[in-house]
Length: 333
Image (cartoon, rainbow, N blue to C red):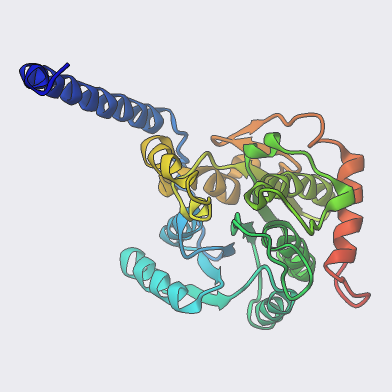
């Protein structure tokens, strides 16, 4: 086809391009609408006055939205975040919106055992009670990086950090019982296996993949934690928030991040939609006596056989104790 013939067909080509664009926009809009109407929402108006809640990773994503919703309900919310400056901006924003002046920012880098211990000491010395500990912070690093403690960064932030922090705060949680521990995991655990012989990887052909076994570890940790806390008045549950349009995807390397951005913006939940199950497990009376369970869309959900293997969970626990360098003087669970 020569240029002149192409010119004759150009109006038709333009029309087809417009139809294709309209079709794509329509499909995305329909899926977005479907996500909105099918996404579970925690509609209970339960108040949290007099309750103290720690939310890790509260400067963005579902952590920020969880903190916002808890502030609306009157809770004293401790925003545990790596960047205090950003944390103060979020605190001011939420306080302005909710008129809740019981918001506190505390520095916490879950990849650093020194930071975790410093944070725990500050909480124990300043807080009279702790009703809920929400392990929300997470990362998926694009490069394999070792922390100052010799741990792989994604595993340190997503699993070892919450493991250590829970131990250090457990006595305060027990004194505040009935109290809760909420762990944000992910259904993406099903894309991985948990290699207990390589829990702290020193190499990886694709470092972002480590995010998946770290979420697997979150689930096993929660199940073993719940077992050990039986009879204490402290419950522990984990959840899948859905696939969220949040900062967790920023570390996906080029060129994989190009199509992923379109998928994330077109099909994933907003952070406000994604925080609903966290909010449900934090506040709802329906789960006040429920422990050791996995939730999706504000409902209990089953796990695959590997993730519910308590022998594996027990071994993960013992290995995690070694890698987090728990001391004989630390609280025990």
